[in-house]
Image (cartoon, rainbow, N blue to C red; front, side):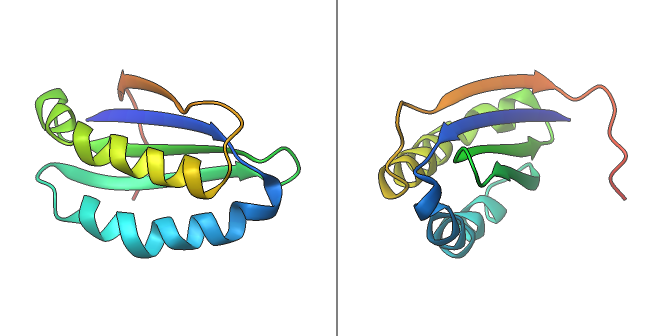
Amino acid sequence: MHARVSTIHLDPARIDQTVSDFEEQDLPRFRQIAGFRGFTLMLNRASGKIVGTSYWDSPELMEASEDEGTSARKRVADQGAAKSPPEVERFEVALDTFV
């Protein structure tokens, strides 16, 4: 399994609406992409920092989803009045305990 980790610093006052819109608009599109395994979103309400991790069956399938990921990050950053561009990292998942 592989993971793409995106970090964005939002205006804390915009977190709830931005997360809600992401869940309603972007996650359904991710679920339709081949190789999508799941998504985790963590946030710090005080600082506005959010970290989203998408999980993929292979590096090739994760790569094939890059356009959708880029679009989603841009929408989130714009809606949440991000203070800086999103940061993106890619990893191989060595261990997970999801059921």
